[in-house]
Amino acid sequence: MRLVIADTSSINYLLLIGYIDILPALFEKVIVPAAVCEELKHPKAPAFVRNWAGNPAAWVEVRPARGRHDASLEALDEGEEAAILLALELHADLLLMDDEEGVIAARGKGLEVTGRSVPSARRRNANCWTSARPSSASSEGISAFHRESWTGFSRSRRVASRFAHSSSRN
Image (tube, rainbow, N blue to C red):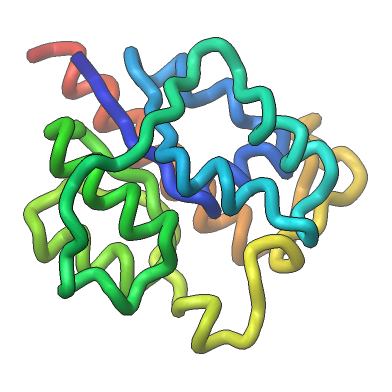
């Protein structure tokens, strides 16, 4: 089974660009930690992101992380920590995460991680609600946003597609 755990920014960006439905096309099971859904309901999140978090798609399983608190993860946000703990608990095939500190921590625990590895929002003085700005439809017929974000997402999508393709041969 191809199981993926998704962190807050991964879900947020996929919603912002209209590609959230790529997840069930690539993975048999998509799990979002309950802490991630709570972060997606942040008052600064766009209304449609908050609405999605309050009523996720039928193919999403929202689940709390049961893992014990891990002191090595305490520098991370609650959603990142929950995503890593849940990925470990469920032996996930892939973790979607882009926070640099989270990616390093997850890989240090032996998890397969894909996503844009970007400096932590805490160090950038920014947050994921304002770093992506949807704009008019591009020539590819999708919502475009910051070039850097799109490049990172495209790279992540290619990695996820390769992962899904190689997993289906096993």
